[in-house]
Length: 547
Image 1 (cartoon, helix red, strand yellow):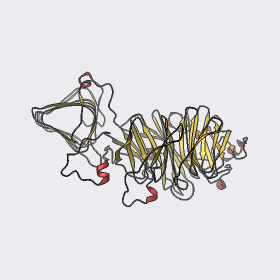
Image 2 (spheres, one colour; image 1 turned 30 degrees about the vertical axis):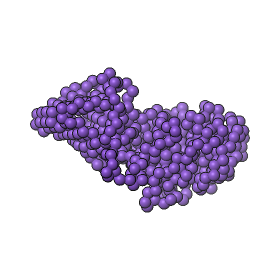
Image 3 (cartoon, rainbow, N blue to C red; image 1 turned 60 degrees about the vertical axis):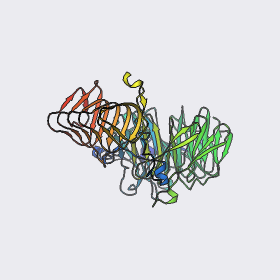
Image 4 (tube, helix red, strand yellow; image 1 turned 180 degrees about the horizontal axis):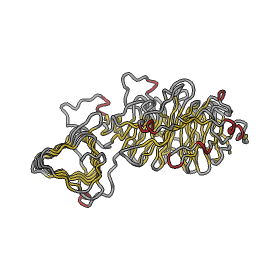
């Protein structure tokens, strides 16, 4: 680690703003280190459990048996785990860092970490996610004397908020701080200086950037403070008892105060309306709010997520935590954060996992619990990805595998698949479907065309003389539970899109593998086993050089 020590410059750079509670300075302090070892960054990315993710559905959650009933149906949301980013660590206080917040902008994810132990320690990772099969930690910054509770990226800078031990800091006037660090191109540049601002409160908890303003909340005896984005000087403040989160929708600002509920403010920080919430939000815990169309969704701890009408504050529904895992303390079965991606509603429920529901006209409908390790502290979802902060297990990168809206003409008029999770196509039978489903297994004796996105938890098999054609995305197995895709004697597999196999691709004597077009990608974690005389035709990207 490269340690930055420019205390003299920090002292020379100090200026006092219009508030006695805020100090602005523009140089790094001695308690910051930058990771210089590329091997450390590279080894942070692990693929041990990459592959098809199961979703524990409502029947499994309730402990209901399917014995004597209709067979299990293919599920929606064919999710795959791309990789896990292990939490940073350092000696003398940084051994137990946990992921606390995520911001995703274009090709980069910015992840903050704080400590689960007494004292202060934190870090920030910048992760390049432009290649969906190979995320890469491009830069890492350690805070040896500060928790980092939330992070945002804007215009070439990372803005972070957290808590610092002001008694051990040369420059800190309060425990609650906001910092601005140059980070263009996916790398921190602390040599150009770090600008800090301080505000009242025990710990800064959340941050939003709105134009040329930075809005920061702080907890006990804190405030919503609006800083000037250029130099972090204070513009205005709204004192509050215990703020946990802030969100903006149109011209309105909503803040979550753990002592009473949600306050909706105008741009001048005048209260427009209050939404009283009778919930135990816990002491110094992560809780967030967010807008989704006309509603406000509030992470309410043990109660789950509360949904309220943003215009009048009326209560709409509670989305409860659906499971009570054995061996998990009740205090860790709480909703910490909520994210929305189109119809998908994701709840970070701590030790009760990452819950997926679907927003419908009649209210939310439970899909299930996504199969992930760790206590889920925070969740963010943009585009085709879900990013889950899973405590000491670091960051989990999940691909949603949404179907491409521009399928080839042959796929446009197909029926959507609805049926068994074990798809079997009989000999002399032709089946053609489009959609986006999770299968248990796929067996093809006849002819099958699948257009869209599909995952298979167990094996896939094209039997002798069978034909399987795919257009879109097809994923088999998982790294810690590898399954094979077998193309039997004289059978044919045609690929147009992305084929991923966490296991082996087995081509038996006389098998044909054909790639259509010029942009197909094959990701094989195991081996390509060619038994006898096999044929591979077409242009494709052999991602792991297995052919």
